[in-house]
Length: 492
Image (tube, rainbow, N blue to C red; front, side, top):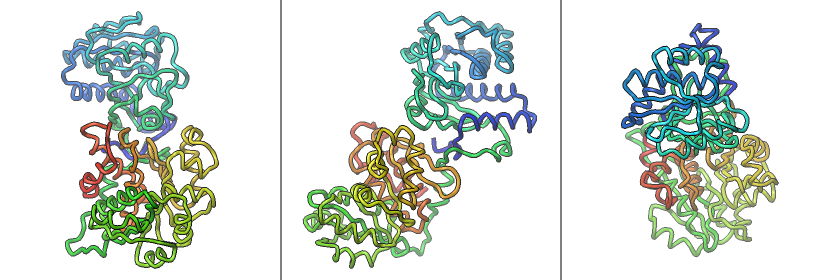
């Protein structure tokens, strides 16, 4: 997925790009549809190379047209292909009608939907509704979705799985669960939000050779980090570099009985390239942390005065992992809150911030939905119901840069669309993952990245490391499993 474009659009914006290609560049709509069908065909032959018996399920509109073109090309390539139509193909219009006509002109046979799919098919093509689906799927379409999901064959969706809302990723009644989705013209937000990733499978993009000029006037809804962006922010180090060039991170946290969080955060900062990392923690943890990771400089902090002296020697603060909310934590909170160094706040630092809201321009806050709800005085459910609105509200309340964690982590942007992370996996829903993220972001700040870039690149590095660590399976993934994967990501 790293090779996808950076821009993610609304369905309406993608349609405007499509119209610009037709009206401004003079590219016939049917040419674009043919390119889409050909792109899907190429991918299907590569991704599902062993599949020799395909069934294309065509519904309405241009999504059906894409399906008829795939069917025609597949038949011409020696694939045993059958087509099932939901509704009367004679009711199709425009380019979709032309695609249907071309398929039947080459002796293609279309069978009306009878409630069943070909039991022997080894690939099913979902060309029912695509991004045109805006209300709950019902009737024959719902029955067909159920049949597709219950079939043993692999499933390829064209543009977006039927039943997934193209903007929100919500499931509209029911939705196809695809093994892969080939999407066209522009990436749709619904592929990456809500339930979209669960239903889309592997996402592949083809721009249909539409000139960039057609996208120039279109505003993205979100942006994602591609490989070139990662390389730009993480260039190769100079041969004469030394550790002093890469900053000193101070991790503040680890209240009594909670040493693991600061240990994870500190090592993540080292693995992400910080020059030096110090830990400020409860005195009972200092020796144990040093013995397990001697590269970390661990300091026993009895009170706020101890912390004040230590802060003066550091460049960046990661505040909150394992902090707790006891009097010891509140004393440290007062010191860190008054400091002006670049900082990353997470966990109990955010819970304490919720008690005394304050903005700060030089701070990155990284709440999960529950912590976001505390900061906003709402509920986790309401945050999840409209994550974009929650992100904006958090930015107004907290200042600086906001990272709203979760599936499809969002990060605020000073200019342009917010950032959406499309990497990561469900195995990362595990203890300590947020501590690792805080350490990575703090390390990037220490190496000189601006606040927004450190947050965005940190989220991406964290998610990609999680994907590498989950290569052998998502269930049972530990936060510490990411640590050894980080070097392969931060040295692109």
